[in-house]
Amino acid sequence: MDMWWPFRNWVGKNAPNADIVFDKFHILRHLSDALDQVRRDEYKRLHRKDRSYIKGQRYAA
Image (cartoon, rainbow, N blue to C red; front, side, top):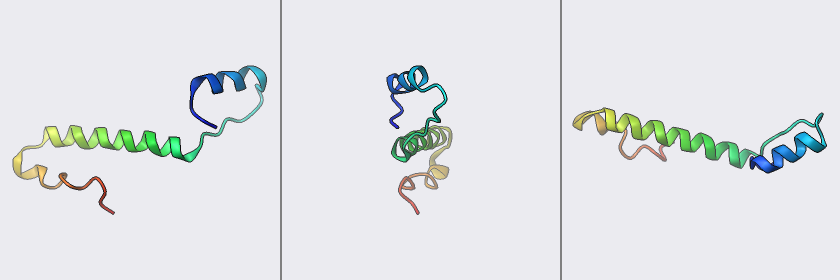
């Protein structure tokens, strides 16, 4: 299901024994956002020459 809190609240009230499973698209979005934040933080932490290892790697395989 969608990760929106009203959906979770409704399921908790109306089907308390149900297992909640989030869809993979929302999970991957949160993981991607977290990875982007780590990448930005590391880029800021590093200096000139060392930044070249991070720059342009967002879509690297």
